[in-house]
Length: 604
Image (cartoon, rainbow, N blue to C red; front, side):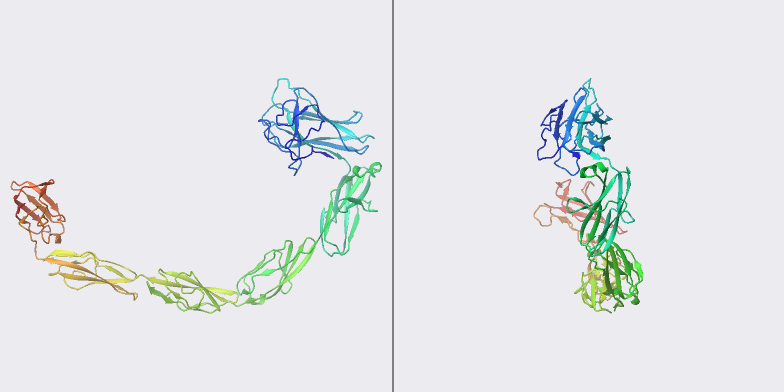
């Protein structure tokens, strides 16, 4: 019997009327009140948020008690069923102290009485610990008299003299259980509670029990007949009962042993029952063994099956080679071809499946050239043989990755792998297409020199396998250098050749060297803003590396100076126009050359 306070869709259950405390239907549970609720959420800020104890009962209620400040009875109820006379019972209840801090701890006495208020047994819980949100069961043993009806009383033993916080508790699942003999039951020699057999089986199963209890007890085996238990005629021996199956039909067959004293035996509720023994008659599983065959010689033979159970894999000659679900045989040989069998034992059934495995020779891949070289922007035909189908990867740069002889046009050196198949077997080979960068030549910027001097050319080349040289091979110190010095006597085009040693195209680039016979220094200019002769332009001065040009007035004051002459003098000094008149210059040509001096007239 179980008192679980019922269940319902409302947050609070109805008043059961078995408490001397005041029932409240809201969540304001104060001293001396109680409620029937699904949860304590939203009730008291120092209470744990708990739900009812009954397993898997989301709509179930429990009794929430905020004990009175004075000791006394807070629960008394008649048990609404007849118990067995002169029988030991276990009384128990699940309790939880809701307080989440150290406070006044509930202390409860349980009392079981007959209907004449004669005490049959009592039990004191002691202080129920707080700060523990786990449900705990408390109980004791009592014995009924000839009367079969009892009532329960719960007493609060705590005197709350200082109005201390605490003494708050929830109660659920109050149970009465007859204390009969200790019965251990099982099926077969292994004493299993569940026994699997296969559909169509004809067998006899032995059900047996070991009992500890009074020597006067009577016993009876029962069978579940679809929701109700029925006595099996003549099955009164606790130590053995044989149940026969003929061409067993799938389903669950439940059995149990019951026991009681002779005086109570004819009352089913007074019998103690053993754990339920179940015979499961199962349909044989579908077993479909698979492999990765056909398999190439030297590869692994892999097996698998989706069915759960225990396994026996056997070779074509019948020898056992594995008990695993997915075994592997390494280094297959041609002699391993044949029919392999799998026996699966599952849920009392034994099913065998066979699978044929062929071990075949693998293809021998051949490629014409494993490392062809091409020039950037060109193509090469790859050639593979030895199989019936081909697959190249990566596919980038290939005309067709699924033929034996695709055209490869990679832009960079690429390692291609070809998978050569013959049936389901395959092997791989590789071709590394080496892409040579085509030559590029840059002869550098054009140059200017004064006759009789030299200048350095600034050439550069790029590409794979490149050799280079200059033409013409005159007035040049090293035609095979990228930075030779040249001293032509007249204007000359020098050509930088970049040739590929890999057979790629040759690149050419030209640099023009302008030869001046000497500087031409104007003796006058007119910086008046008419865009005619507004700057003092010195012809061929840019043929010198870093000439220093200085201009002084008649008093020797330096009014212009420049190293190099990228920006000619514009007739200004400190951003102001200088007066018209005669000025004097010195041009230091560097490199040991004699300075050029003279005068110039500034006109506006």
